[in-house]
Length: 166
Image 1 (tube, rainbow, N blue to C red):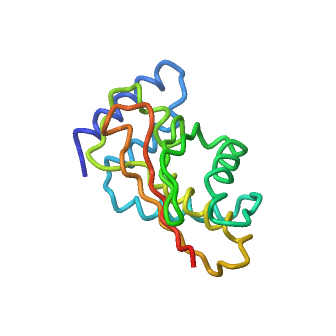
Image 2 (spheres, helix red, strand yellow):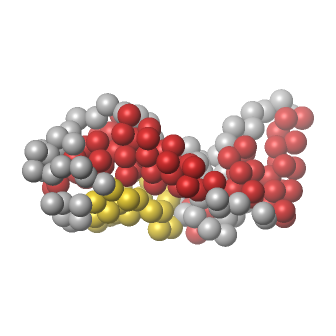
């Protein structure tokens, strides 16, 4: 547990409550300080949500970037920029997503990646998009945050999604 980070977040939450403001994602920030064992839970929840959302399936792997951009836009997940795409991976930058958008401007830094919920959500979305590809059965994807805005100070987090194409 990162007690220093937890103390800082709790102080911010206290001040916001005293001012009559919402604490929103500050609660998630407090969880960050409690430890990274929660990453797996958030990843799982995001993945399940991604496979639950209704998206237009793609007919081939090459259409994943456009299908992913459409789904991210439709469900207001954030602002996305695809930075790389191949038959096996998609790399992207995601700005303004729920895990970090309320924490970025509060001088809160993470020692590790923080956005495991979005990573799971992206993996689930790609699996759902690929469900329409008749040539691909039982697709399993894995997504990982490779650069977190709470570490880098950038306005976006970067993710890599790996998927099978056979």
